[in-house]
Length: 356
Image (cartoon, rainbow, N blue to C red):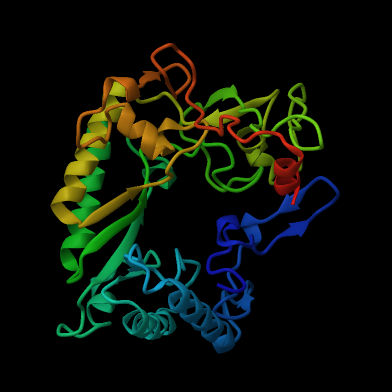
């Protein structure tokens, strides 16, 4: 979406954003999403509705659907992810209706998935499409216990109870299938740059782990395989001072989820989360697919550790969990980074491709 649907950096544009000086910036205190229109922070409302931006998004959707809608692997289409910064729900609902018509026009039988914009009122969603016109429509609900903020929970049972309470309330009152489009096993906000590059907006509840930051998988030389200063006490630039000890790399270390919960707790939480999803929802997607540090944010590691797997894990794929560091390890004690293993040769042709 043009001008960001939520102001998050992973929307493609962190907004609003300003440099205070050469080494300090501000983002979260002035967050704004401008795809609906110009956000007036003082009045806490949109000065006008940007219908041209909404229409631009629909044209982009049509272009994508024209290109890929007939592909045999095309299964579902979600027009916008997490449009949850002060959304205009009536305009969002109309936007979803028009986007769904494009899905029906250009695909054979794909699902239309609409993110709930963190609005959990079933009355809005249940009236959006008629009962006789809701075929292959799903509502996407994201749920991260890591962001709940203190007081959160102190036992695995607290976590399990929260999953069941939320999804029995949210999913069971919607007439559409519910997909958990994003969730993770993290119980705190310690993951490196979870709140954006060198930034954060939520304080960790427990003490974070600090592990060696991964090293680049790119070949050395030709300006590719560089590294940062691993001796620096903190690496800038810097966001709000209250978060720099949590958000910035320190002496070559990257932060990761706390070890407040041990592996038995994690397994219990994973099991009850999966049971809740099976009971109340139609699909779930653990975010992310894989990463270099965090097992609780890593679908592949969580499966191979025996936390979320629904089939047996082969002996060759089984991992072990290091509670002290919060990281997944191979059985020989090597940390699982899942970084690229250097399979691309460093020929001039390949180096040119990487540089371009």
